[in-house]
Length: 124
Image (tube, rainbow, N blue to C red; front, side, top):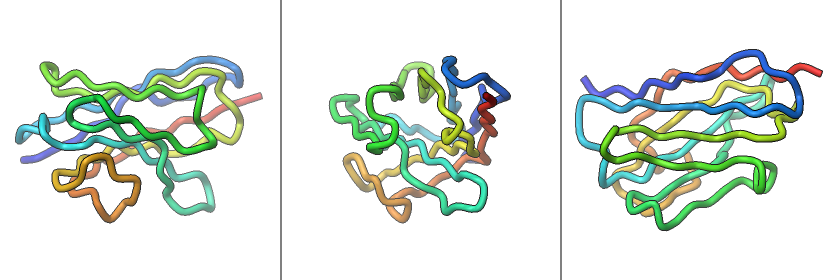
């Protein structure tokens, strides 16, 4: 069974750091682009960051540039998202996803597999 499982979410204070992880299983994702998306309360799910399978290309949403860092460990079949300087508006459910047919897509419809999400709540 192909699975992407996110972890690391929780309740954190504004200004603090958080590290999200995504563990993949069921098949090899070593040649897939991997991305993070988030859905804030009352909003549509939106692109956050993507990394190509070679890790040479990374894109970020404008709202997270300079604060979020996406990385991947092919050997451990894991994807991470380091979040610094958390803001209240970062509160959302964060999803990891895999895209086998694109280099580094930002559109949700390019992704084939999705995790169930992990909740991040930022408090003041």
